[in-house]
Length: 261
Image (cartoon, rainbow, N blue to C red; front, side, top):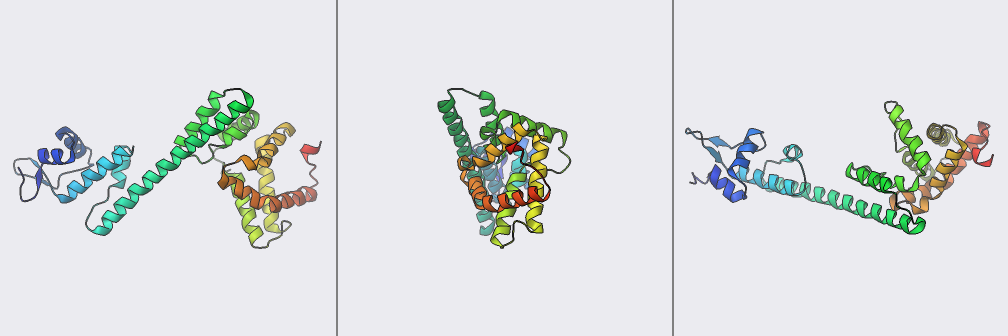
């Protein structure tokens, strides 16, 4: 029975194509509480409640948990609220498309490797998919890093996770180099040498000074032409500046390149 354009729980369930038990559960966990409770204890829903149940259904269909959905519910009081709601749903769908594209890219990477080496590394593939599901943008690194250097980097982070060394140190160095180069700053300048110092500390930290690991890390860096476009482009733009800065840094610090030993 409808009461002054308001819905009882059964009518709400029918309208939203969910069970009465589902609405009762949503009420219990505070996800969708009825706007009113009749004197007889019956749940009564209004138009705003209807907009909320539709948001719940849509967000649930996009794979969000009820906990996440609760954080994204938007009360609808105007057309602007509707636009905001649709923008949010559009963003979620785009994020899912991006994740799906990354999964496809990881599959293609593994496929190319199998064709080239005639070997299958299921552990590598599983790790890539896990990073994608964790929204880690560096999932592709696994396919290009040698196992030994990857193990060394992983162990370093496990032992040193609270010391503030960001796992995306290389990208940050490259971005800083691009910015300084655009500003006309010299690689030999204080700013340029700060980047070179950060690069060298990170490299030594992850390789532990092992010349073989250093060579493998350098091979990864020089193979940027195979990186995803976003990262490969940053490396290309920063390469000349960064290499000059590192060369000057090593000369000033009397550091002989381990690669030349």
